Image (cartoon, rainbow, N blue to C red; front, top):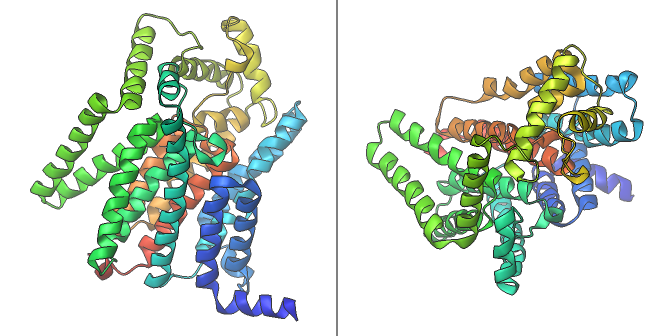
Length: 414
Protein backbone atom coordinates (compact mmCIF):
# COMPACT_ATOMS: atom_id res chain seq x y z
CA UNK A 1 0.00 0.00 0.00
CA UNK A 2 2.76 2.44 0.94
CA UNK A 3 4.60 1.62 -2.27
CA UNK A 4 1.52 2.36 -4.39
CA UNK A 5 1.09 5.72 -2.66
CA UNK A 6 4.70 6.59 -3.46
CA UNK A 7 4.18 5.66 -7.12
CA UNK A 8 1.05 7.84 -7.27
CA UNK A 9 2.84 10.80 -5.69
CA UNK A 10 5.80 10.57 -8.05
CA UNK A 11 3.65 10.27 -11.15
CA UNK A 12 1.09 12.97 -10.30
CA UNK A 13 3.14 15.56 -8.42
CA UNK A 14 6.44 15.80 -10.25
CA UNK A 15 6.60 19.58 -10.15
CA UNK A 16 5.91 19.76 -6.42
CA UNK A 17 8.34 16.97 -5.66
CA UNK A 18 11.01 18.65 -7.82
CA UNK A 19 10.80 21.81 -5.68
CA UNK A 20 10.79 19.85 -2.42
CA UNK A 21 13.85 17.81 -3.38
CA UNK A 22 15.63 20.90 -4.75
CA UNK A 23 15.25 22.65 -1.40
CA UNK A 24 16.27 19.42 0.30
CA UNK A 25 19.50 19.48 -1.71
CA UNK A 26 20.19 23.07 -0.71
CA UNK A 27 19.59 22.17 2.94
CA UNK A 28 21.95 19.22 2.58
CA UNK A 29 24.57 21.41 0.94
CA UNK A 30 24.42 23.74 3.93
CA UNK A 31 24.42 21.25 6.76
CA UNK A 32 24.45 17.56 5.82
CA UNK A 33 26.10 15.50 3.10
CA UNK A 34 23.67 12.62 3.67
CA UNK A 35 20.69 14.94 3.12
CA UNK A 36 22.30 16.26 -0.05
CA UNK A 37 22.89 12.75 -1.41
CA UNK A 38 19.34 11.67 -0.55
CA UNK A 39 17.90 14.82 -2.11
CA UNK A 40 19.84 14.25 -5.33
CA UNK A 41 18.69 10.62 -5.46
CA UNK A 42 15.03 11.54 -4.96
CA UNK A 43 15.28 14.40 -7.44
CA UNK A 44 16.65 12.02 -10.07
CA UNK A 45 14.08 9.33 -9.27
CA UNK A 46 11.27 11.86 -9.57
CA UNK A 47 12.50 13.11 -12.94
CA UNK A 48 13.12 9.75 -14.63
CA UNK A 49 10.03 8.09 -13.17
CA UNK A 50 7.62 6.90 -15.88
CA UNK A 51 9.81 8.22 -18.71
CA UNK A 52 10.87 6.17 -21.70
CA UNK A 53 14.60 5.39 -21.90
CA UNK A 54 14.37 6.53 -25.51
CA UNK A 55 14.05 10.09 -24.23
CA UNK A 56 17.20 9.69 -22.20
CA UNK A 57 19.44 9.32 -25.22
CA UNK A 58 18.17 12.53 -26.79
CA UNK A 59 19.93 14.50 -24.06
CA UNK A 60 23.33 15.19 -25.64
CA UNK A 61 24.54 17.18 -22.64
CA UNK A 62 24.07 14.13 -20.41
CA UNK A 63 25.76 11.87 -22.96
CA UNK A 64 28.84 14.09 -23.27
CA UNK A 65 29.03 14.14 -19.48
CA UNK A 66 28.99 10.36 -19.45
CA UNK A 67 31.72 10.37 -22.08
CA UNK A 68 34.31 12.37 -20.17
CA UNK A 69 33.47 10.84 -16.78
CA UNK A 70 33.61 7.41 -18.42
CA UNK A 71 37.17 8.15 -19.48
CA UNK A 72 37.91 9.02 -15.84
CA UNK A 73 36.63 5.53 -14.99
CA UNK A 74 38.75 3.85 -17.64
CA UNK A 75 41.87 5.54 -16.29
CA UNK A 76 41.87 2.84 -13.59
CA UNK A 77 44.03 0.82 -15.99
CA UNK A 78 46.92 3.29 -15.66
CA UNK A 79 46.37 4.43 -12.06
CA UNK A 80 48.50 3.08 -9.22
CA UNK A 81 46.92 4.80 -6.20
CA UNK A 82 43.59 2.92 -6.28
CA UNK A 83 42.15 4.35 -3.00
CA UNK A 84 42.61 7.88 -4.34
CA UNK A 85 41.19 6.77 -7.70
CA UNK A 86 38.04 5.49 -5.94
CA UNK A 87 37.65 8.83 -4.15
CA UNK A 88 37.75 10.68 -7.45
CA UNK A 89 35.26 8.32 -9.10
CA UNK A 90 32.86 8.51 -6.17
CA UNK A 91 32.68 12.28 -6.55
CA UNK A 92 31.64 11.81 -10.20
CA UNK A 93 28.62 9.59 -9.43
CA UNK A 94 26.07 12.44 -9.80
CA UNK A 95 26.98 12.65 -13.49
CA UNK A 96 25.28 9.28 -14.03
CA UNK A 97 21.76 10.72 -13.67
CA UNK A 98 21.71 14.24 -12.21
CA UNK A 99 22.10 16.16 -15.53
CA UNK A 100 19.57 13.82 -17.16
CA UNK A 101 17.10 14.53 -14.37
CA UNK A 102 17.11 18.23 -15.26
CA UNK A 103 16.51 17.42 -18.91
CA UNK A 104 13.48 15.28 -18.02
CA UNK A 105 12.14 17.55 -15.26
CA UNK A 106 8.83 19.17 -16.21
CA UNK A 107 8.45 22.92 -16.53
CA UNK A 108 7.53 24.33 -13.14
CA UNK A 109 4.55 26.67 -12.71
CA UNK A 110 5.36 30.14 -11.43
CA UNK A 111 3.87 29.38 -8.02
CA UNK A 112 6.36 26.53 -7.63
CA UNK A 113 9.24 28.78 -8.62
CA UNK A 114 8.13 31.31 -6.01
CA UNK A 115 8.01 28.60 -3.35
CA UNK A 116 11.55 27.60 -4.28
CA UNK A 117 12.65 31.25 -4.23
CA UNK A 118 11.30 31.91 -0.74
CA UNK A 119 12.54 28.57 0.54
CA UNK A 120 16.00 29.28 -0.87
CA UNK A 121 15.92 32.70 0.78
CA UNK A 122 15.14 31.25 4.20
CA UNK A 123 17.86 28.60 3.95
CA UNK A 124 20.52 31.01 2.70
CA UNK A 125 19.65 33.64 5.31
CA UNK A 126 20.13 30.96 7.93
CA UNK A 127 23.46 29.96 6.42
CA UNK A 128 24.75 33.53 6.28
CA UNK A 129 23.53 34.25 9.82
CA UNK A 130 25.43 31.20 11.04
CA UNK A 131 28.55 32.45 9.29
CA UNK A 132 28.24 36.03 10.57
CA UNK A 133 27.76 34.79 14.14
CA UNK A 134 31.47 33.92 14.23
CA UNK A 135 32.33 37.48 13.26
CA UNK A 136 30.17 38.95 16.02
CA UNK A 137 31.58 36.58 18.65
CA UNK A 138 35.28 36.82 17.70
CA UNK A 139 35.59 40.03 15.71
CA UNK A 140 39.28 40.73 16.30
CA UNK A 141 40.38 37.12 15.87
CA UNK A 142 38.45 36.70 12.64
CA UNK A 143 39.93 39.88 11.17
CA UNK A 144 43.45 38.77 12.09
CA UNK A 145 42.82 35.59 10.14
CA UNK A 146 42.22 37.57 6.96
CA UNK A 147 45.80 38.79 7.14
CA UNK A 148 46.99 35.28 6.27
CA UNK A 149 44.13 34.10 4.04
CA UNK A 150 41.97 32.52 6.77
CA UNK A 151 38.34 33.50 6.25
CA UNK A 152 35.09 33.58 8.18
CA UNK A 153 33.68 30.07 8.85
CA UNK A 154 30.72 29.13 6.65
CA UNK A 155 28.14 26.36 6.32
CA UNK A 156 28.79 23.56 3.82
CA UNK A 157 31.36 22.07 6.23
CA UNK A 158 33.31 25.36 6.10
CA UNK A 159 33.75 25.05 2.34
CA UNK A 160 33.82 28.82 1.95
CA UNK A 161 34.66 28.67 -1.75
CA UNK A 162 31.62 26.67 -2.86
CA UNK A 163 29.37 28.46 -0.35
CA UNK A 164 30.41 31.87 -1.67
CA UNK A 165 29.82 30.79 -5.28
CA UNK A 166 26.38 29.46 -4.42
CA UNK A 167 25.52 32.63 -2.51
CA UNK A 168 26.51 34.72 -5.52
CA UNK A 169 24.36 32.55 -7.76
CA UNK A 170 21.32 33.12 -5.55
CA UNK A 171 21.64 36.81 -6.47
CA UNK A 172 21.38 35.82 -10.15
CA UNK A 173 18.25 33.85 -9.33
CA UNK A 174 16.63 36.73 -7.42
CA UNK A 175 17.26 39.07 -10.36
CA UNK A 176 15.61 36.52 -12.64
CA UNK A 177 12.61 36.11 -10.33
CA UNK A 178 12.18 39.81 -9.57
CA UNK A 179 9.74 40.52 -12.41
CA UNK A 180 7.67 37.47 -11.49
CA UNK A 181 6.81 39.02 -8.15
CA UNK A 182 3.54 40.81 -8.76
CA UNK A 183 3.32 42.47 -5.36
CA UNK A 184 5.40 45.31 -3.97
CA UNK A 185 6.14 43.18 -0.92
CA UNK A 186 7.54 40.35 -3.02
CA UNK A 187 9.72 42.74 -5.02
CA UNK A 188 10.94 44.46 -1.85
CA UNK A 189 11.90 41.11 -0.31
CA UNK A 190 14.04 40.20 -3.31
CA UNK A 191 15.69 43.62 -3.44
CA UNK A 192 16.52 43.28 0.25
CA UNK A 193 17.89 39.79 -0.37
CA UNK A 194 20.09 40.99 -3.24
CA UNK A 195 21.53 43.80 -1.13
CA UNK A 196 22.08 41.60 1.91
CA UNK A 197 23.81 38.76 0.06
CA UNK A 198 25.95 41.22 -1.90
CA UNK A 199 27.06 42.83 1.37
CA UNK A 200 27.69 39.42 2.92
CA UNK A 201 29.93 38.38 0.02
CA UNK A 202 32.05 41.48 0.56
CA UNK A 203 32.30 40.76 4.29
CA UNK A 204 33.18 37.12 3.62
CA UNK A 205 35.68 38.36 1.00
CA UNK A 206 36.23 35.05 -0.79
CA UNK A 207 37.70 35.68 -4.22
CA UNK A 208 35.69 32.97 -5.98
CA UNK A 209 32.35 34.32 -4.82
CA UNK A 210 33.29 37.90 -5.63
CA UNK A 211 34.51 36.79 -9.06
CA UNK A 212 31.08 35.29 -9.75
CA UNK A 213 29.28 38.39 -8.41
CA UNK A 214 31.31 40.91 -10.39
CA UNK A 215 31.23 38.79 -13.53
CA UNK A 216 27.44 39.03 -13.34
CA UNK A 217 27.62 42.81 -12.91
CA UNK A 218 29.96 43.06 -15.90
CA UNK A 219 27.77 40.91 -18.15
CA UNK A 220 24.65 42.78 -17.05
CA UNK A 221 26.40 46.05 -17.93
CA UNK A 222 27.27 44.73 -21.41
CA UNK A 223 23.73 43.39 -21.86
CA UNK A 224 22.23 46.79 -21.03
CA UNK A 225 24.61 48.52 -23.42
CA UNK A 226 23.56 46.17 -26.23
CA UNK A 227 19.93 46.97 -25.42
CA UNK A 228 20.86 50.69 -25.54
CA UNK A 229 19.69 51.22 -22.00
CA UNK A 230 22.51 53.65 -21.31
CA UNK A 231 21.24 55.14 -18.07
CA UNK A 232 20.62 51.80 -16.40
CA UNK A 233 23.99 50.52 -17.61
CA UNK A 234 25.76 53.53 -16.14
CA UNK A 235 23.82 53.07 -12.90
CA UNK A 236 24.95 49.42 -12.67
CA UNK A 237 28.58 50.43 -13.30
CA UNK A 238 28.32 53.17 -10.67
CA UNK A 239 26.77 50.83 -8.11
CA UNK A 240 29.41 48.13 -8.71
CA UNK A 241 32.25 50.65 -8.51
CA UNK A 242 30.83 52.25 -5.39
CA UNK A 243 30.33 48.87 -3.74
CA UNK A 244 33.95 47.97 -4.40
CA UNK A 245 35.28 51.32 -3.16
CA UNK A 246 33.13 51.44 -0.02
CA UNK A 247 33.99 47.82 0.82
CA UNK A 248 37.68 48.59 0.44
CA UNK A 249 37.37 51.55 2.81
CA UNK A 250 34.76 50.35 5.30
CA UNK A 251 34.79 46.52 5.36
CA UNK A 252 37.93 45.35 7.22
CA UNK A 253 37.79 41.75 5.99
CA UNK A 254 37.48 42.84 2.35
CA UNK A 255 40.28 45.36 2.80
CA UNK A 256 42.56 42.75 4.37
CA UNK A 257 41.85 40.23 1.59
CA UNK A 258 42.39 42.86 -1.12
CA UNK A 259 45.80 43.86 0.20
CA UNK A 260 46.74 40.21 0.69
CA UNK A 261 46.08 39.70 -3.04
CA UNK A 262 48.16 42.79 -3.83
CA UNK A 263 50.96 41.41 -1.64
CA UNK A 264 50.79 38.07 -3.47
CA UNK A 265 50.99 39.81 -6.84
CA UNK A 266 54.00 41.86 -5.76
CA UNK A 267 55.70 38.71 -4.48
CA UNK A 268 55.08 37.05 -7.83
CA UNK A 269 56.52 40.03 -9.73
CA UNK A 270 59.59 39.85 -7.48
CA UNK A 271 60.09 36.20 -8.45
CA UNK A 272 58.98 34.73 -5.12
CA UNK A 273 56.70 31.77 -5.80
CA UNK A 274 56.69 30.37 -2.27
CA UNK A 275 53.69 28.11 -1.82
CA UNK A 276 53.05 29.37 1.70
CA UNK A 277 51.43 32.40 0.06
CA UNK A 278 47.97 31.19 -0.96
CA UNK A 279 47.67 32.73 -4.43
CA UNK A 280 51.29 31.98 -5.31
CA UNK A 281 50.81 28.38 -4.25
CA UNK A 282 48.14 28.10 -6.91
CA UNK A 283 50.45 29.50 -9.55
CA UNK A 284 53.07 26.99 -8.56
CA UNK A 285 50.51 24.17 -8.84
CA UNK A 286 49.67 25.32 -12.39
CA UNK A 287 53.31 25.27 -13.39
CA UNK A 288 53.91 21.79 -11.96
CA UNK A 289 50.66 20.48 -13.43
CA UNK A 290 51.63 21.76 -16.87
CA UNK A 291 54.96 19.95 -16.61
CA UNK A 292 53.11 16.70 -15.90
CA UNK A 293 50.71 17.22 -18.79
CA UNK A 294 53.56 17.75 -21.24
CA UNK A 295 55.01 14.41 -20.14
CA UNK A 296 51.66 12.59 -20.57
CA UNK A 297 49.68 14.59 -23.16
CA UNK A 298 47.61 11.84 -24.76
CA UNK A 299 46.09 9.78 -21.93
CA UNK A 300 47.22 11.60 -18.79
CA UNK A 301 48.39 9.88 -15.60
CA UNK A 302 45.05 8.43 -14.46
CA UNK A 303 42.55 9.67 -11.87
CA UNK A 304 44.40 7.84 -9.11
CA UNK A 305 47.87 9.22 -9.75
CA UNK A 306 47.45 12.99 -10.06
CA UNK A 307 48.34 13.44 -6.40
CA UNK A 308 51.35 11.13 -6.67
CA UNK A 309 52.66 12.89 -9.75
CA UNK A 310 52.22 16.30 -8.16
CA UNK A 311 54.08 15.09 -5.07
CA UNK A 312 57.02 14.03 -7.21
CA UNK A 313 57.09 17.38 -9.00
CA UNK A 314 56.96 19.28 -5.71
CA UNK A 315 59.91 17.25 -4.41
CA UNK A 316 61.80 17.91 -7.63
CA UNK A 317 61.08 21.62 -8.17
CA UNK A 318 59.88 22.94 -4.81
CA UNK A 319 61.11 20.63 -2.00
CA UNK A 320 60.71 23.41 0.57
CA UNK A 321 56.92 23.29 0.13
CA UNK A 322 55.37 21.69 3.19
CA UNK A 323 53.22 18.55 2.60
CA UNK A 324 49.99 20.28 3.63
CA UNK A 325 50.64 23.00 1.03
CA UNK A 326 51.13 20.60 -1.88
CA UNK A 327 47.90 20.97 -3.83
CA UNK A 328 46.58 19.66 -7.11
CA UNK A 329 46.22 22.31 -9.84
CA UNK A 330 43.34 24.67 -9.04
CA UNK A 331 42.01 24.64 -12.57
CA UNK A 332 39.39 22.13 -13.69
CA UNK A 333 40.57 21.97 -17.29
CA UNK A 334 44.15 21.24 -16.26
CA UNK A 335 42.92 18.65 -13.75
CA UNK A 336 40.99 16.84 -16.50
CA UNK A 337 44.02 16.99 -18.79
CA UNK A 338 46.20 15.42 -16.09
CA UNK A 339 43.72 12.62 -15.49
CA UNK A 340 42.98 11.62 -19.08
CA UNK A 341 45.06 13.79 -21.38
CA UNK A 342 43.72 15.22 -24.62
CA UNK A 343 41.47 12.16 -25.07
CA UNK A 344 39.45 13.25 -22.03
CA UNK A 345 39.89 17.00 -22.38
CA UNK A 346 38.14 17.10 -25.77
CA UNK A 347 34.80 15.58 -24.64
CA UNK A 348 35.03 17.61 -21.43
CA UNK A 349 35.36 20.83 -23.42
CA UNK A 350 32.41 19.86 -25.64
CA UNK A 351 30.37 19.11 -22.51
CA UNK A 352 31.24 22.49 -20.99
CA UNK A 353 30.15 24.49 -24.04
CA UNK A 354 27.12 22.29 -24.89
CA UNK A 355 24.63 24.35 -22.80
CA UNK A 356 25.28 27.37 -25.04
CA UNK A 357 23.20 25.70 -27.77
CA UNK A 358 20.09 25.80 -25.58
CA UNK A 359 20.47 29.38 -24.32
CA UNK A 360 18.09 31.70 -26.12
CA UNK A 361 19.01 35.17 -27.32
CA UNK A 362 16.59 36.87 -24.98
CA UNK A 363 16.26 38.43 -21.55
CA UNK A 364 15.65 34.98 -20.11
CA UNK A 365 18.66 33.62 -21.92
CA UNK A 366 20.88 36.30 -20.44
CA UNK A 367 20.55 34.75 -16.98
CA UNK A 368 21.43 31.32 -18.32
CA UNK A 369 24.46 32.77 -20.11
CA UNK A 370 25.53 34.74 -17.02
CA UNK A 371 25.37 31.60 -14.88
CA UNK A 372 27.32 29.58 -17.45
CA UNK A 373 29.99 32.27 -17.77
CA UNK A 374 30.38 32.74 -14.01
CA UNK A 375 30.76 29.02 -13.38
CA UNK A 376 33.21 28.74 -16.28
CA UNK A 377 35.26 31.50 -14.67
CA UNK A 378 35.20 29.73 -11.32
CA UNK A 379 36.58 26.57 -12.94
CA UNK A 380 39.65 28.53 -14.00
CA UNK A 381 40.65 29.02 -10.36
CA UNK A 382 39.07 25.97 -8.70
CA UNK A 383 38.89 22.23 -9.47
CA UNK A 384 35.09 22.52 -9.04
CA UNK A 385 34.23 19.02 -10.21
CA UNK A 386 36.73 17.21 -8.00
CA UNK A 387 34.75 17.64 -4.76
CA UNK A 388 31.16 16.72 -3.89
CA UNK A 389 30.00 20.25 -3.13
CA UNK A 390 31.65 21.57 -6.27
CA UNK A 391 29.82 19.04 -8.43
CA UNK A 392 26.53 19.96 -6.79
CA UNK A 393 27.03 23.73 -7.07
CA UNK A 394 28.13 23.57 -10.71
CA UNK A 395 25.41 21.22 -11.94
CA UNK A 396 22.55 22.56 -9.83
CA UNK A 397 23.16 26.26 -10.45
CA UNK A 398 23.76 25.88 -14.17
CA UNK A 399 21.01 23.40 -14.98
CA UNK A 400 18.36 24.86 -12.66
CA UNK A 401 18.84 28.31 -14.18
CA UNK A 402 18.97 27.14 -17.80
CA UNK A 403 15.96 24.87 -17.35
CA UNK A 404 13.74 27.65 -16.09
CA UNK A 405 15.00 30.33 -18.44
CA UNK A 406 14.06 27.93 -21.25
CA UNK A 407 10.61 27.01 -19.94
CA UNK A 408 9.48 30.38 -18.57
CA UNK A 409 7.61 32.62 -21.04
CA UNK A 410 9.42 35.82 -21.88
CA UNK A 411 6.32 37.87 -21.21
CA UNK A 412 6.36 36.96 -17.52
CA UNK A 413 9.80 38.42 -16.94
CA UNK A 414 9.95 41.23 -19.50
